[in-house]
Length: 214
Image (cartoon, rainbow, N blue to C red):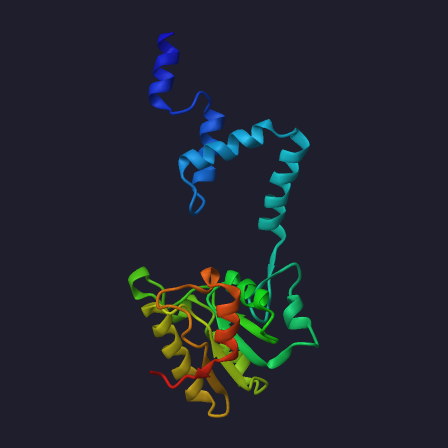
């Protein structure tokens, strides 16, 4: 009884395996220990083959997923379906922070161009500079001369505005023929595209405005 008592004092859970599983789940964004525990206990109640399929899907995702060589969107192949499509307008490129933003814009059904996923935004406070995100590959795409318009669809935050201005300066230094626009400010300051409703986001894209670096 004394050993059991000491065990419970040193861990919150009656099993080291359970404790480790909760630890891994709670490391995910937005998951506290209580929610992680509920998920782990739910998995324990599921049939073994279902849990194995769940684990296999995560392992395959991490090991086999690709990022598009052109736009850096997530893909099963080296080139994503959007970049492959002959029905998309490849002269129109929408610049977004992350993959979730691509999904949000696609869900509006109001955009028929292609994308460029930066994988982040410039944030000196977090040690993220222009070289840490996919800006050089964007400039390389523009230098081909195939792009006619770039839409800036980054968060309406200080970091988003800083990144917009940096991209604007880089593009302006190599081409005067590329139109640079920005989604309309129907999206509240500080909001991210992921949390914007589809109607508002769709209208913001349709009603985009010229970006002049201000």
